[in-house]
Length: 280
Image (tube, rainbow, N blue to C red; front, side):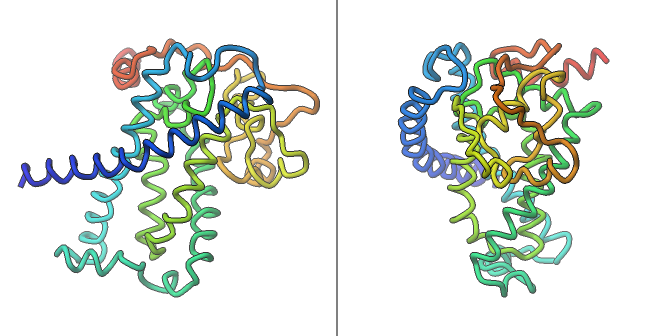
């Protein structure tokens, strides 16, 4: 069984790489051109980042880790809450969703998924900025040369208790996994977009969808905006709960995990939260 499971993981890793490589090439070209003309901050282009190898490791392995854990939790959830354990039953259960939500048009399910997941992630994000959760989220904030390739820098604990957990909750609630065909590409592009070195605010649309300047304020020091702009996609949550920040005529700069000496290497970042836990 363990051998079969290992082969399945290798197969999924191969599939993931085949999807990620062309997407990465397109994003690299798009944001290289855009940041050349509309850079928010001067400095090295993304391919000359000091921690480029670290970000590339995250960029290619985070999707695999997320996929494996998501599938595992969905299988576990179907077994525990719905009593479904055989492979055919699992496929039939999740294939097109289940319950009332699955009867909605797919585009409505996709929109519902985006809105509800963003609302849940807003509060999860705020949780990770408090107490003992911060040491895991500090890894994401440790990038001092913030750019589109920084979007995937998440400690596994942060990833699993955030994005993956929310995905599993909504899919178990009945939303069809087919919405990922729409939501997935949007999420990948938009996540890279808000981390990109761009001076774009999108004018009045800054209140509709998160922009690079909106999110880059979140990556600044606490006294400048690091405790604001928690929404991943829709700034309305920050507006509603008093955490919105977009100073007129000013651009964010100087990024990093303030007062946290997070290692530059991926292996160092993996153990960093646990070392902090031992020290505390």
